[in-house]
Length: 186
Image 1 (cartoon, rainbow, N blue to C red):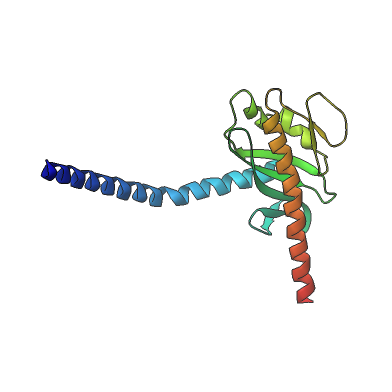
Image 2: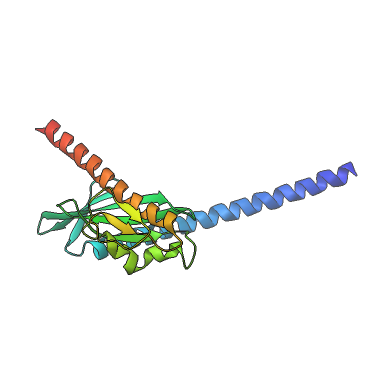
């Protein structure tokens, strides 16, 4: 019985080792393709929400400066926030007047028919021309910095609004770093 246990344990170990090696191989092959697809999705999202930009310069890991004719026209910030179903990755465009130009949800795990409505234009368009410190309300409003929550998905709505606020903070931090670098170089 002891020999049989050792034999079965050895077989199980070999099977596990082979499976792990196969998974590592598949990961090695697909990792660059996945990264390329993610970069393409980010580039498409930036062009969609900041269409006046001809090109984008990376300022920081998650902050990009939109350029047209050599001049900045706005910024795009890639931010991840926590929603009801998990992480919500989004891109936020901010113009030079510190107002939101648009948002694009890149990925999410929100409930279909509820939180997933955050990807719909009716919800996303509410963020245009808003400033930081957004407030999510349950009833339709015309107040300058209020966003109407998705019915049945207040957590998701608050998460997206929080992501927009976080994008503003990330942009300010990046701009401060750029300013300090510039001052040190002069």
